[in-house]
Image 1: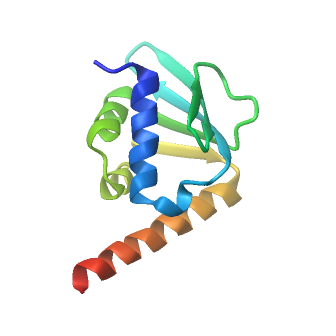
Image 2: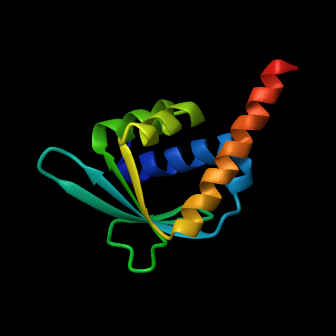
Image 3: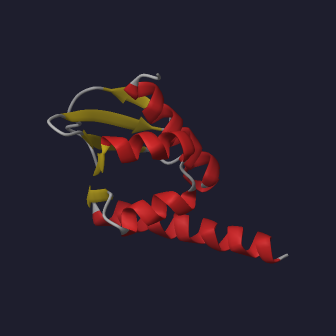
Length: 120
């Protein structure tokens, strides 16, 4: 089984592969992984990613997700599954609203491009 840091790296790389426009985004975010009786906090710095197990004092966003959902998304997640997880409340993002809006817009444009490719 992969370490949590490896899973975070895999999740970031897979997401960036699906949304290449975010590959060079400079961002520090906190990642809160919740299990039954445990919460793990990680600091993730992009580009990279550089991952450390601590609270991010310089984070622009905090991403909260249940550990089982995170494991599934990290290994098999697609842009569609990330969107579904966010819409159903499995992923919660708080922090700088401008950064959230920017990422949302970039993801939406990528989804539009993906739909256009399927049509043609």
